[in-house]
Image (cartoon, rainbow, N blue to C red; front, side):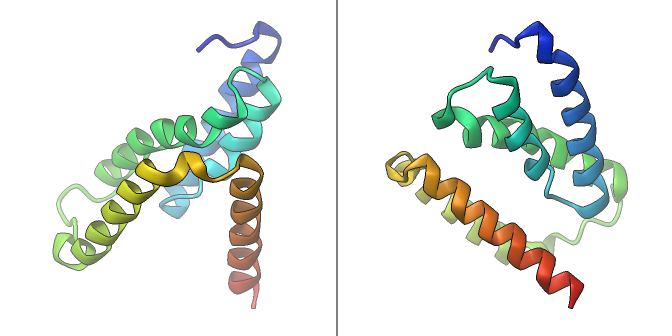
Length: 120
């Protein structure tokens, strides 16, 4: 991946913000990265979501490890991990068939729903 030097500072700040948001909320760093990756213009529309996941996975693992290394609730998380893994496999197999515009719309609706849910 080659960043346009004009937007390198945007990418660095977006990465910092995504890591911060991800660490505080246990996720949601992708909400920062998707628009930032679009602004920088360094990747195609089809590569936005896979790139975001590839960045956020190690950030999430690091956040988890630093926040609670001795008390990871694996028994409580296991059903979610299994379901998430199955969903990831399905998207990996069939996700390229979903138009990018629909991915953006679905993400936008989920962000709005989550925000309204937490405000009420």
